[in-house]
Every structure is written in structure tokens, then in C-alpha cells.
Length: 520
Ligand code: AMP
Ligand code: MG
Image (cartoon, rainbow, N blue to C red):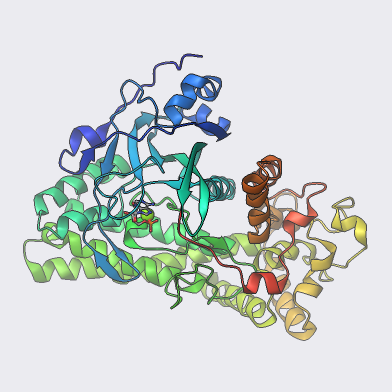
């Protein structure tokens, strides 16, 4: 089926010559469509049936560059685990082009795993099926949780083996993003003293993401502040759901405020600020609880790139940039409080409640940590604890959600709040404080419990479930477990019959030795 013309409008290619290398994808030898994201295709105004046809697959696999696309590899640098690499760039990715979606938003369409580029250094430019499917699943889960994220339009097996620690089936993905501008993009030009180019990038980024801020204060300062606000909001949302990005290098932090580069990411089970899953994060630099601090550190690296543009007087430039960096903890604290209020069902944002609500939320998290409770299920089980008992187990029927009225939360019968937080005095003392706070506010629409279920997912991509569906896909070429899990994760706030197992944490021994890897 011929692919209808695609209305590419490639502003990056057009407006930023010198920021990239025009470069074609390496065609996949024997492409096979693994997953096509129909909902996302529709959002982009693309014809999903045509994309799934042989002509569509030729485009999704890099065999055919469609009319209007201008594939290019973007230049960027980055701090990786604190050390600066002046030259990274798209080593296994390409920007194919940009589209305006059905809502009038500009979106990048990019490949990952489309072969070597001038920025590949020693790498092969390829990706493997497992990590490509993992990025698909994680991105869709984050999107359904309401968290800004890049998303996968299509995952394609290339028919070519890739060499990692062993030989793996190769794949590439088609990624959709609000843009691919990273902190590291600014660093690339700043490190070379190309301040005019940094200025052009500032103007481009502001026009793309904050058009209303053009022509106000020094544009670089406006951009820095907008970026800090977006990252504060994003990281607060990550913290709410227990997401650990795993590799928050400056090249993996976007100016758009979207989550990008799902490499060694994972969701935390037991609440623990020190939780780390990435095999290479030995020092815990990117541990769960470190993420707000690292975001601030990365924003400081962006600020350094912008100094000459903020004020010609170096002292004044530093003072203005420092003011933004110093304001970040308060920006983040406000966003975090808003996330926690929603998750605890606390209505209103009256400043006179801030201190008490913050203390209540911190005490709750301290309780989860002290008793080793599952982050996701503990929040969810609060829906059962609104009126009295901390959720009474009523037998196996509940485990299968057959009697959701018994516990509105749908948490498995083995994970009531009493079981998640077995030390009763501390639990009941906190619950009493929380109920007293709830009693001071009007009932939410449909009641407190329903509001809590709308704010706290029952399902997150559990590491052991993700591994199981990827194993089925890779070892047995069976994508049906993947599809089933994906369907559950697309409705994370609704208890779904027959899916109790997807809500359950892994055995502790399993989580204790779970490791994630970078190699998409
Ligand atoms: P990451 O840490 O995955 O965000 O990647 C960091 C840098 O390494 C980027 O410049 C990537 O393009 C590059 N890179 C990672 N894997 C490969 C690969 N297989 N081939 C070429 N470049 C790669
Ligand atoms: Mg990256």
C-alpha cells in the first residue's frame, strides 16, 4: 500500500546548519514490523495501515527515505557520570524529520539503531530487539501515567544480528519527541567557544518550546528558567511513581522536559531513596533519591553554557544564573508537594497548609522506607484505608479483583496496607494524622477513595514482568505477553480482571539482584 505523502517541515535542518551532519540511515536487510503504535500514528496524522504495509515498513526500517525527510545526525556533548565528553552526538540515531501533529504541535521523528554515523566513535550504531521493545513499553507506560515522555512509533526487527556480550537479534525504533535538544547540545557549542551558535540554539529552542518568552529578559535567562521549571515538574512526577531514569547524563536531559533515553531505567519496588538498578552506576550517582539533586547539577551545566549570553558582565551573568539554580530546590519542592498532595488525596493548595502537608508526606515516605513497603501499592492501598481499617484481606477472590468492592484499590490480597506496613503502631499513628487532615476538607467527587485511585496507579512496569515479556518476545518470538502487559499498563489506574500478577512486586531476592543495562 503506498504511503500517503508525509508533510515534513524540518526546522532543525533548515534553521541550524552546522549543528548536524546530513546522513542517511543504513537500510535494515530484512525488516519485520514488531510493534506499530496506532494511537500515536493517529495523533501524528499518519495512516497506520499504510505504515504497516510493505511500503510503510520500508520507511520505518530506513530502507526508503520518504519525500520531504532530511535525515541528519545531531551533534551534542555531555557530562557522563560527572565527566565531560566534548563529542558525543547521534552515534546510533538520526533525526528523520519533523511533523506538525493533529494538535498543532511540532514533533521530531527519529530513528534509534539505524546504523553508524560520523558520531559513532567505536560503536556499531545498532540496537537489539530487547532494549527496543523495552523502550516501547516504558514510554507507553510513562505516557499513560501522565508523565511527559518521548514515545516509540514503531519497533522493527532488522533481521541482522548485533554483537553485545553475546549475539542478539537486531532492531531499530522510530522515536517521536517534542524535540531532541539536550543540555549536551548547548555544551557541544559552548565547549568550542562558539557562542554565536549557542545564541542561535537559544533562539531556536525558545521559539520552539517557549514562544511566549521571546523578546522578554535576556532570552538565555528566560530559557534557563523555563528549563528549570520543566525539569522540576518532570522529576517530581518521576519521584511520585518511583521512576529511576538510571543515566541522567546531561546528554539525556531534554530542553522540552520530556523523559528521554530509556536505557537502564527501572521502577522502584520497596521505597528506598538509595535504590539503583543500573549495572554501571556503582556510586549510586543516579539513585532514586538523587534525581532532584542531579537535575539541578545538570541545569547548572546548562547555565555555564549560557553565561556569555545572559550578561556581557561576567559577574552579573553569574549572579543571574545562580539565582535560577538556587531557585531550583524551591521550584522542585513546590512541584513535589503538588504531586504528593494528589497522591495522598489532600485537596487545596493553601500556603498555610504547605508545611503541615509536606511534613505529613515526608512522614509517610519515611514509614514506607522504614518498613520496606512497596512504593506503588502502599500509595494505592490508601484508598482502602480512608475510613478506618487499613484494608482487610478477604480471600483469594480479591486477588483476582473479582470482588473489587471489598477493596476499592484492587491491590492484591497479599498486599494490603496491614501487610505492606506490618508495624501497626507507626502505621496507625500516621493514618490517624492523615484521616484528620482529610476530615478538614470537602469530599472529592466520588469520594476520597476514588480520588486516591485516580492519582495512584495500581500498575507500573514491574521489572520482573517486563523481563518476562521481553524473554517471551526474544527467545520464543511470542509477542502476546508483551501485548497483554502493554494493554494493562495503558490503563494503570483501573483494576483489571485477571491481572493481579501484574500488580504484584517481585520476590525480594529477585529485586535485590535485578540489574539493568545501557545497550539499546
Ligand atoms: P547513551 O548513554 O545511551 O545516551 O549514549 C551515549 C552516547 O553513546 C551517544 O552519543 C550515543 O549515540 C552513543 N552510543 C551508544 N550506543 C552506541 C552504539 N551502539 N553505536 C554508536 N554509538 C552509540
Ligand atoms: Mg543518550
